[in-house]
Image (cartoon, rainbow, N blue to C red):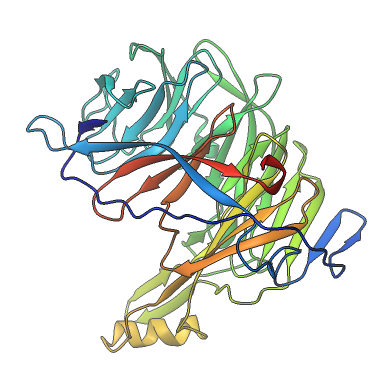
Length: 379
């Protein structure tokens, strides 16, 4: 099925077969810390013990009025309708369960229903909430695309994003920590025309507290079972925090390929560049979860690379990635390794209430792939 698009995307599917499971005793647990080896318990199987089964693919065709090229902040409602921000068009777009466009709304601007630097969107099951104007304004829309209201955010937590809602309806809002690699978390209560901060705390996402003044870097975050779950930069560490900021669980992997950001000073100018990271996990219906990491194969000294880059002599970066499957306890089971920033499936973006995983595919232009992760126990 096709909806509006710049051109037809040619899809290369990933077909993997199931085999029997094996055990690996090198995974250890120490008071909330789960330490995994470089490869999981099933990595030595003759063929992959999991497969991603393609359920549907939503492609886009070119149209003079609407060319979709950027799918951001993807979410869904309970009926299976899809919603995303098209940042290049400054629009909020909804698709039905077949991938056909239900409606579009918005334009560039700062008026009611307009978008400018809208980077994030979440839902509480009643409304869609968009972090607009670089997070300075929270806009609410109903599931039919009607603009409901705007709330100006607290100035102390600007330049941020909406992350999600707790089970009690509190909004989790993230904002940058300048001069740090990490994120500030704010737990908010939403009123009719204002928000109030219930609690806030800082998350370190790199084990290195300071970077150049004025710069910020961070990995992605997720909210799961009222826990803030964090990815990491430069180290394979998945960490879970309660809503007071207390560390409750750490999952590590004996994997040292990740690279910290690089910095350079050239005259009066300063620059910083990310070289991949460990993303926050995507949690599946059966309790399993998956995490994507990416890193450069040909960079060991990020600052030296940045110095070469400012001189115009830096080589092209060769990226690698690992899509890792964990069980519900955090034990690494299997890793899909490959070239590039993300798998041929696309970049994971959402898991729906039925456990289907949605990937955004930018291999040519853009498409949405819907997959089911088939486990050995499903056979």
